[in-house]
Image 1: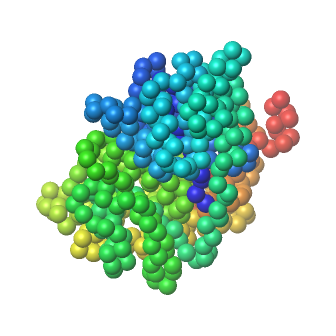
Image 2 (image 1 turned 30 degrees about the vertical axis):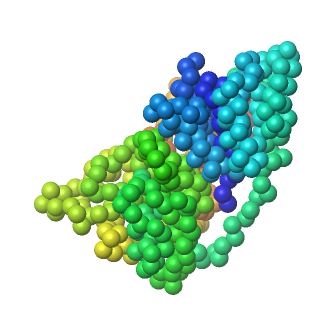
Image 3 (image 1 turned 180 degrees about the vertical axis):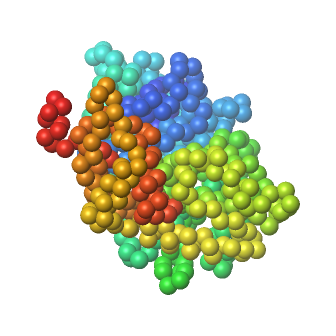
Length: 444
């Protein structure tokens, strides 16, 4: 189920990044007392009243400014607004309405989207009263908040909750697998969809980002239904700035939310970009399956790179996902593109795999006979038993005497051995360590 998306917009230095950090609970955005510090949108998630929500931070909007960075920031904010389900217009409650605020208000008025006006930096009662000035914008009742101190943020989120669309359950046949095609502009995402469907389902052009919207397409492969989600980024007419290309990250993240398996498409003629690793990391965070598809392999001189050599280079950049399979394709010619669907179906099955508790614990006991458990200050980690509590993704709980004794190296060892024994090809697995009740009481 896709999470509703909230876009934080406003002019520079009104506290959008501070509010973003308050919502997602971590300092994900750079916060400085300089106008326009946040130049790229940042995407995060949080929960309110039992519902998972997505939020996107945008750079400060300066309408009508011709300077390249400011123009690019404004365009990115417009694109985030277009994608959002609800908009939060963040204003500076200390300075009051400015001409830039009025220009942004006019833009937001034309969107006809649900809107919350947040008068930020209201750190005391007097400043809360001053927020009433923002009624003049004609965008509804302003709510005074202090993102830095957390004042009134609960009331603010209640207001957001009232305006959110009702949850939509994207019901699917259980046998269908949803596959998100992700990657930077111009790596061939639309061409891959066209090749897999055998028809020109999406517009294909040499201009990066010509696909306007994400399009779901149904195909059958080996008797199974697959829903393909093409996530090509948006380009606007006129001057294109480097930041606009990063819009595809937001679109990809939205598609990943709805997918079982993601296909990260890489251009064989270009080096792996930081953006590719960033999106791959998001796939792992969301615990979705992943395939790395190296496109345009037909353009590579085989004497310069073999598949094995190229794969080693990419794996070095994606070393945090050693379980990911690779496939080398040409979306243009159709070479090996069917392998993408075959792999997606295999990974979908791996995600549904359930290991009986007895078999699982017997395997873990054998693993521990080969590897000493961690210890600290004379205390040794003891494992009592392991159980698989969920599938899609495979999720395990390990009951121990003291979870604080578990370190990263031991987690990695356990995950690697579980994979060696049971597979879980192409999918993340989750392992949680919990204290057994009586042991936890003793530790206290």
